[in-house]
Length: 217
Length: 217
DNA sequence: ATTTATTTTTAGACAAAACTAAAAATTTGT
DNA sequence: ACAAATTTTTAGTTTTGTCTAAAAATAAAT
Ligand SMILES: [Mn+2]
Ligand SMILES: [Mn+2]
Ligand SMILES: [Mn+2]
Ligand SMILES: [Mn+2]
Image 1 (cartoon, rainbow over the protein chains, first blue to last red):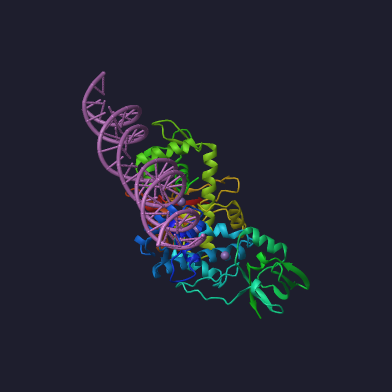
Image 2 (spheres, rainbow over the protein chains, first blue to last red):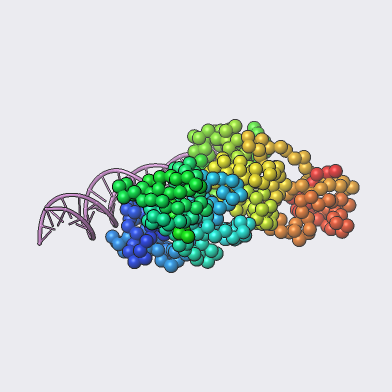
């Protein structure tokens, strides 16, 4: 499987909400920052290799083989991100692009040794679960800050958007994984949320609240 | 620079003995396991990018820019090899192929942080020097076991052939970097060498002796 | 000094992964 | 239900890196 094919598989995996409906050509094109026509070509190739099901105009659906493959790439991506942050002292907003390259290094043994070296981490620096050796992903129960209710108390356990810009903004707000948050109020006018964090009250915009995951405690 | 271009630059670097004469098209083809015609195409492209000097039928010579670039790739290759052996507990015969991929990961910051994490190692698991940040390589004075004289005492400091097969053979002989060796005798008939290693006498074939570097003490 | 052998380059083709432009199918709006 | 808008596919190019076959240049041998 080539680097490009692997990135497509991962993209389709991440875009697969429903297991029934295929992921649309346009959605994949958007995610991959390419043109729909290129996506069609690639989907056909992936169908040829039995990693996706494809019927014209019906979008792409990963096969079991495809899902397993996706999990393996994601496992590598997140293990490398963990390595970069925990061992090389990168910050969480710098690691995605590098992991985007490292995830394609082809060596089963490398992944397993890296996993052992890192002491079998189960979540990456953005709170996302790291698939195990066999591709199993333990789903973490989490809820968007935007959908938490007034009075709820929770811990920041993840982010939906993991772009550098957003992560650096969270740094500025002193919001990091593990921080305790209390929802003091929700403003119906603009859907902003007033929270308490480290004994300070801060106002979080709807857009920001929509990208922070909490575990309600 | 693409992955393929980088591998060519490295190949030309390693094949450059004389600084005057260009490296022949055929030699590069051999090293890269490809055809001479492909090499000619690539040399032209590299000349276009000013990393090699190229005149028809004269072979390829790296420019200063090319040499600096080569040193950077080799730096990454050897740092990753060191990481794999020292941190992930790979053996020295397993790391070359993986480093062959890792050396192409594009992030200056990653290299510098990796270097720091490894505590600035200066030689890789095969005894080869790791170029510094600026591409400077400190030459290690070393001599082939095959050219050492009877009575010489030395320490194994490197290997010329770093193929898995050779390295595993050395493991079997208990020859590793740092081992002390005494040259007891040289057999003129087949150029084999009788050495003392760990209080045992072993006979080393000419071919093997030709691939072990010593520092005479 | 020619002829012969080897090396290197050119010419033409191919597969991968992208693109643009245009056609076909599907979805949406009235 | 039909026209309009959108999505998806096809057709035809392009670029990168490879290949084979043949031509040209260089090196070796008689
Ligand atoms: Mn990637
Ligand atoms: Mn992540
Ligand atoms: Mn390489
Ligand atoms: Mn090495």
